[in-house]
Image 1 (tube, helix red, strand yellow):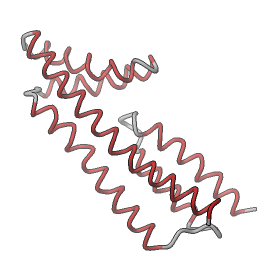
Image 2 (tube, helix red, strand yellow):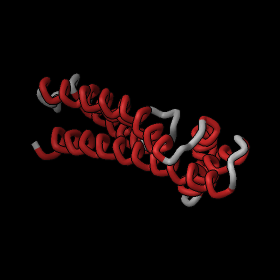
Image 3 (tube, one colour):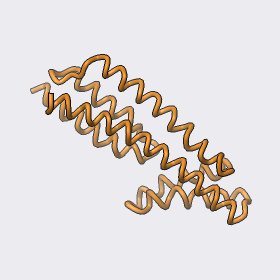
Image 4 (cartoon, helix red, strand yellow):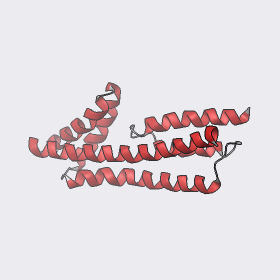
Amino acid sequence: MMDWTLVALGGVLIVVAFFGCIVPCVPGPLLGWCALLALSFSRFAIPTAWLVAAGAVMAVVTVLDYIVPAYGAKKFQCTRWGIFGCTVGTIVGMFFLPFGILIGPFAGAALGELIAGRTMGSALKGGFGAFLGFLSGVFLKLCAVCAFTGLFVWAVWLR
C-alpha cells in the first residue's frame, strides 16, 4: 500500500514539474527529481547511480535556466528592464493560457525596453531576445522533466 502511495506522490510531482517548466517560480526539474526520490523509498526504486545522475542533470539544468535566458537577452542587447519585463510578462501571461504564456514574455520584455527608453525597433529586438532566452530555458527544463518522467514510467510499469 505504501509503495502505491509513493507512486501517486511521484505522479503528482511529475505533473507539477511539467507545470513548473513554464512557471518561473515553480522548480520543475527539482520536482521531477523529487518524484524519482519518492520512488527510491518504494519497491520501484531506480538504481542509485541513476538517481545521482538525474540529480546532476537537475542541478545543471537549474543553473542553465538562469544563464541561458540572460545570455539570449544580452545577445539581442536587452536591458535589465527588458529581462524584468520578460519575467513579469511570463507571470501575467499564465492567466491568459494558452497564448498568454507565449505572448506575455515577449510583450513584457518589449514593454520593459520601452520603459528603459529604447526605441520601438530596439525594444522589439530586445523583447525577441528575451523571449528566445525564455523559450530556451523552458526547452531545457522540459527535456529534463521528460527524461525524469521516462525513468519514472520505466521504474513503475516497464521494469
